[in-house]
Amino acid sequence: MCKPGKQVQRYDMRHFVGSIVFRTACGLAILFLLSIGVIAEVHAQAPTTIVTAIRQTSDKARSDVEIELSGPASPRLVLLRKPYRIALDLDGAVSAAKLPEPSDGLITGMRQGFAGGDRYRLLLTLSGAVKPRLEVRRDGERATVRLELPSANDAAFVWSDPGDVSRHAVPVAAPAVPRRFTVVIDAGHGGVDRGATGDGGTEEKAINLAFAMALRDALAGKPDVNTILTRSDDTFIPLNERSAIARRAHADLFISLHADSIRYKDLRGATVYTLSDRASDALSSEIAESENAADRFAGAEWDQDAPEIHDILVDLVRRETESLTERFAGHLVEDMKEAGVRLINNPKRSAGFRVLRAPDVPSVLLEIGYLSNKEEEKLLLSPDWQREFAGILAKAVVSSLRERGG
Image (cartoon, rainbow, N blue to C red; front, side, top):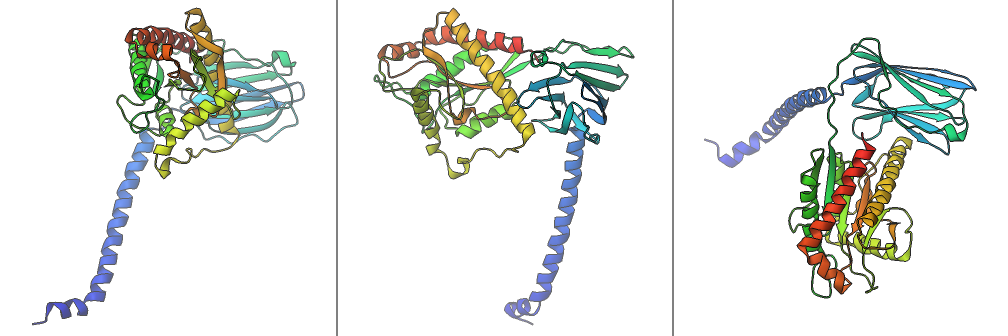
């Protein structure tokens, strides 16, 4: 009888090779099963609209573009200057169409791709201003989107959605689906990150959470608004993850709530901040630096921003988002003024806040007050004041979103 040690030595190479073959076979089987699952998942999530053909006719005075589709069509236009460009968006669509060759007319360039989520975007670069006209013709499950672009002056280069631009070759009954908006409410700081501390010992992280819940409750009665809190307890969340929560939810609005402490003890009132590469003033720069320092509590894996595709399509999404953000920020400031909310001088400001960097979600940072002011600290602690201010903010949010529409 062989000793156990010698038996292992004699058959070591044979067992080793057999082990490799067995593991390889298992690995291939697992990959096969996973591929079936992935294909099934992709098929289940496939968009319902396919771009089947793109045609253009173009000269110096006019250009027309026709897009053939299989599936529903609800196009939207985004207009940009410097240079003149038009982006045509289709939600839930993919393209199986080849772009036409460039022409010598008004359209000097044409690109297609995704612009966030499953939104298909056709980007047209123009040699000059046009007066766009959009028409959709439907025939059963197929549709044709026609974009007419006659040459015009700069003043005519505008677009306001006229509503239903369809002309039905065959009537299609489509029940109206009420638009629901998603608002992500971010209670700044939390966990090991206490934020600012008032002279009375009040911690900013607690004020932010209490006000976030008051705002959530104020929006709870709105049938067309869904709210998501980035945190509902005393938890630390890195800045990038806060904006990532909004992106994963395809949010229509992201509001980050704060109550900082600053060196100007007499300063009090609300402030609305938006994102910019350069701070609008010294105070905004100081506050942004303070808020961005919150990530000192995060691990190294949170050091970098989420990777983005830095091309013109993503840039267009970002510009559209900035426009919606600026519109909401102005709307919010005006509504707070009308409601008698105390504001600082020049209450709409900007700086490089990391928490506002989602390229496809309109985002603002709202300083509800300053803990460095003793009187304001007392107000910030008052549940009645929180409910009243949250009600004003909720009204501004809802009216702004409904005004924006789809």
